Length: 116
Image 1 (cartoon, rainbow, N blue to C red):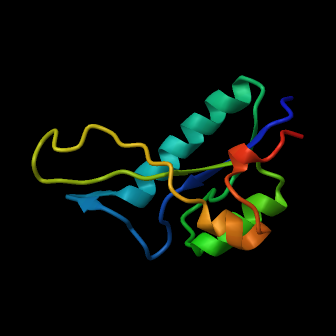
Image 2: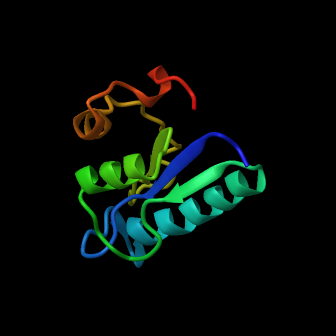
């Protein structure tokens, strides 16, 4: 297995449905996608820590803390948008300040840390 561990967070969960359109809920779509991405990573020899494996809500701070405690090198949170207008959204990737990581570990971006 790889020396790298990636924490995958299926956004939302529990009573927090995220974006909803008709009968589709973001929390369900992100869980399915997270499992699929995780399987691809695992099949490629990457260690994967699943932040959420069922329909349960956790605070962002707890998610970051759990990922840090699992030894994750990277934290990927998967979300999606919703719109009544077809093709309004075409994908988005953000690299935001890693405040939850910094708060729980008192460090900067994971990419700034030396690899184990």
